[in-house]
Length: 437
Image (tube, rainbow, N blue to C red; front, side, top):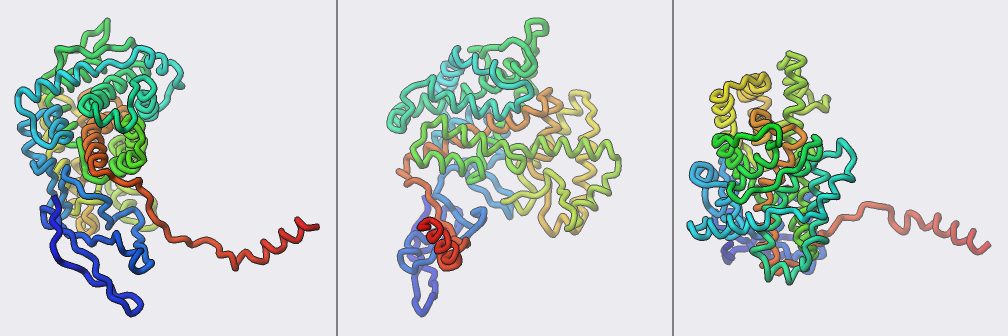
């Protein structure tokens, strides 16, 4: 927990001095507590995009953007990728510690028992228009879960929190696979009790009555890694949406649906799909240097997708891992993807270019993720869905932490810059005169 050191920052305003407490986190990060600022001075802070605002205290994920550090519950992401499955990490995020063997078995059993979609919900898939993006379908179906799984008010959900958390982590995976099957006109494949979380998902995606799917252990291993790398990332846009919506005591499913919608944007979860589309464009054109030049032109709106990060000012630690896994998997599988060559060349040029280095524009996790998903057979319109499935434990963990803190409803302030009553006084008088006539 953050330690309240007896230190203060002094704010001087209109001849007064106001002491603002300095709060120190367990990793040494410091923050000014401004909760009494408006009451003391009449001032509020303004921070568009919340780039310099800590919206909460949290014990879940630690990021050091300057050093390229990412830890879940204090454990480095590199260690989790080597030694844990996605189910282990989901348990870690939601419960705070890695599971014992018995806890792992119990959690896996709960995931299995809560993996089936209510049969009546299947009819919903028939009414989405052909070509609807899977993320929109996924968000809608998650929101609809509240109608099919009763007793989802905040008090009941807290009382049955273990089942509630397991249900949303497990059943959304089934919904995602069903959405894909529906989009290609194939029969739905139900989850199997004898398969692991990631193996089950791959089987529901690709198994067919006329072409049984062979579950590759390597594909399962890679999906575990991909899901672990995306399982949480502190107070990003979608996680913040979950906390904001959840603060109104909205039911868990509607809250997760809101996070899914936030993730669907091209500047957030949709970036991995945007990277692939851009790599295709560059490959088709054939002139990589032209696109590098366009990205450096301040008058050109073009930007290289997959480079730079809001938090990381060095190489994204997730990108380091996924780049190696991507090259290894394609080499072992005998897959030649020209987009990987384009990506490598882009990275090589960018890392030697002062423009990119000075601005800390290093490849992020989205840069190689799409190439690996392509190699595994995941269609491009499902890339963001994969991100959402991976992020479920993080969203649930933050929702659980938030309700445990008895958080007040989120209600930011604003700085009004519209017209004043004096500026529109004449207009109001004119209208009033016309009304009297």
